[in-house]
Image (cartoon, rainbow, N blue to C red; front, side):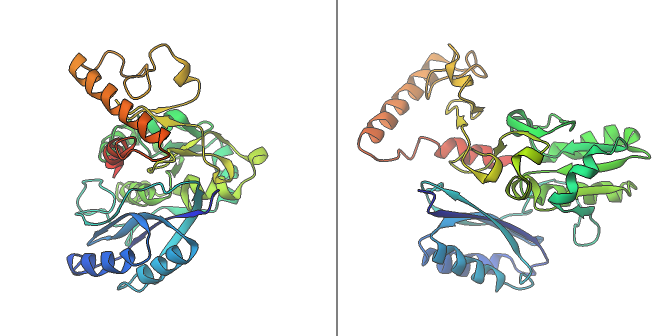
Amino acid sequence: MNNIIVATFYHFTKYESPESLCQPLVEKLSSYNIKGTVLIAHEGINGTLAGSRIGIDSALKDLRSLPNTKGLEHKESHANNMPFFRLKVRLKSEIVSMKVPGVNPLLNVGKYVDPHDWNNLINDPDTIIIDARNNFEVEIGTFEGSINPNTHSFSELPKWLDENQPKMSGKKIAMFCTGGIRCEKATSYLKQKGINEVFHLKGGILQYLKDIPKEESHWKGECFVFDYRVSVKHGLEIGEYELCYACRWPLSSIDRLSKDFVAGISCSHCINQHTEKQRSRYAERQTQINLSKKRGERHIGANFNAIKKINGYN
């Protein structure tokens, strides 16, 4: 139990030829029997990998040997089962997709706040707390008093920040996200817009949940993660959420008691959104999933397509 290490990492740097790094990296990582996704772009590297202790340590050593990547930091949690089906190394235009030219966290970024200092910052009445994640993530957990921009993708956040910039005048802006990478760009964007008192949670929600005891925490709920665990809670223990395979919305144990919830077919978020043909297809997929469970196997369709699509946050 909990014997699989899950390492999450990102590092903003400058790769002159990121395309030349992909194939050698996938060959090295493949030899360690690890799985997950690594994104490489001109602006740096971002990813999550899972495997044995020795496999993850070897992978991190290789990642830090990439040009200008020695300072790469990572966060670790655990999983009972392998949370990914394959290893992927992908070339991207951005390692987190904001779609705003010129935003460069290497040149300008908000002030990092250690998790142990975060409560004091967000308790300040002059602080505006902004959740930089997408709506479905905010729904299952967030910090007390934070604002939900109601975005469906990270690339929608700049527009929301522009529309709400007048409200930020004379205030401290505290931003947070899952692991920190989205806040790197979001705080850099605000700094370019002339907002100077900008802060972000170092290491993101994951570091906070790991470092801060539950009894001292201002976090409410669970934190969505982009793998088959779906969510984690304080101490980075695996959470209770599961995905609706039909609409990809995270569902709590209470959500799964709804009359609209039919495993693999519908939930209260999508009950009226699918055709009979789609529902029939989902039902057949669920039958195959149930048969796989009886054989003690994991069906590749169970969460694969849902997680693959929901990973579009970046």
